[in-house]
Image (cartoon, rainbow, N blue to C red; front, side, top):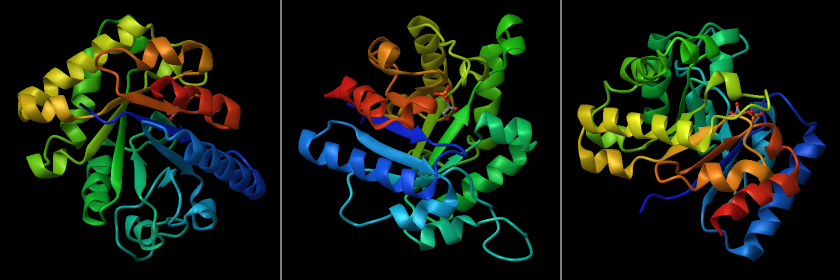
Length: 250
Ligand SMILES: O=C(CO)COP(=O)(O)O
């Protein structure tokens, strides 16, 4: 059975105090409920040091990392630096990074290699735009994103990757993919992995859904056969909402 995962992507939100309180509240709640899924907080990098602790249930991740180990890259934070302070995971390929910061498939591939070298758990995001969905080219688009930045990995390294399917038209819009639409894409992703690697590896890969997932729709979305968890934006900023989504797996 694949491990279920619910991850909150805080994006560029929360003050330091709010971040610490939210992290503490989720940790405390999960310590007493014995949750059946892994839970991550992807926080702004500047807050990570204040959140990381050995005794915590919630794992911490960065929303971005630079692929060089060090050097003249003003304003950037390297995968090595993230890992050095105890960060456990990193998001790579989020559509906001692809679109707003023009991150290319080959740059994302470099990030994947660098994060693996630093033993960071990779959450690799993929997803199509509304235009690609409407033109019927959504499956090819998403599979190409995986091929171009992930499928160069050997089987051992690929087995460490978590995939998050986030249709761009569903992010922050209140529109979600229907459970059937989402599951169909997850199934296609799994088939592509089986084709590139093996059926066994495909069966073991966790594929999360993201895009306007909230307490009212979490149950039906996150319990589809090929959906192994959620990457949650807006609804991860409020402890009660995030905990309700996590409780889908209790
Ligand atoms: O982008 C997302 C998570 O990475 C999804 O954001 P929303 O849940 O706010 O739509």
